[in-house]
Length: 375
Image 1 (cartoon, one colour):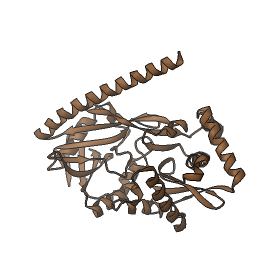
Image 2 (tube, helix red, strand yellow):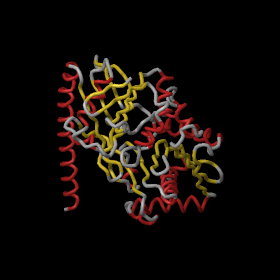
Image 3 (cartoon, rainbow, N blue to C red):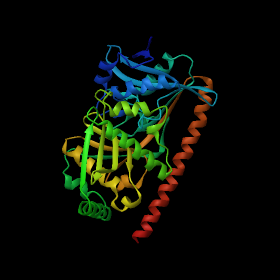
Image 4 (cartoon, rainbow, N blue to C red):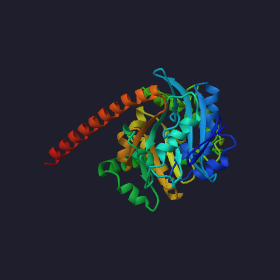
């Protein structure tokens, strides 16, 4: 189905199949992450259909000359008695629409309205977990008046043009020293080895070992294990087994005397690397910090391979700061369509105003505490 309004032509699809050329032409390091790559989107859409959790809606927006300028990967859902189009779904840490670099912030409200007009039977479009920037390029969606800063952040480590020493020396001195000593102690008492494999080259034995260690470590830490959920396990296994096309799953491993003591899983599109699922042994191995050692080794592997950045993804865990990552703000934005949608939108605007105010108060308290310590 194609809808035409003003400057835009909107094609509505229920699958990404058949859109690879447009998708690949539109995505790049300036406007997307590996979560927005065609390979990941294809696997995700297949799982959404298999899971029956919602109806996928793919909006491909073209300019009047037929050139693709935007992609919205969305899901129909019902919430608060309203009919939603949502860009967020659990396995995707970043859920932003893909926008061509030629688009400006002034284009976006009209473009979003056209997408909404092209999809019947919805009240709202909700875009969530949008990064404030891709590398050095700002995300124009966060400039809109209906966008709000989330409490949660993402953490990215730039790699391009940096040496191994520059990466290491950007870390706090005490953390750097503790991690170095942990690695030396492990190497002195055990045969320590690091290895990594990309999807299609990852052995079934390592996939099984990763799943077992991930199950144990998340249980010990009291966390949910998305790797083994009924809805999403098949997606992660497909990435590990090389079914994501240009979106490659990777699995790094740290062993002691041949025994795996840490695994780290992530995805990459060749230039950008995202780490998503760590697993490490605790107990007698905890003093060695095997998980942090593996992060450090994996970062150096991708730096030496010429990748642009290593993304530790969403979540404000302290180790991400200590590894030298830069904070990337996350935003959401709401676009109303119907009268009922506008009613919810006004409530939502109040909520983000309160959220912004609470964040400002928290930052002021933090700065005051730091000034007091410095004094």
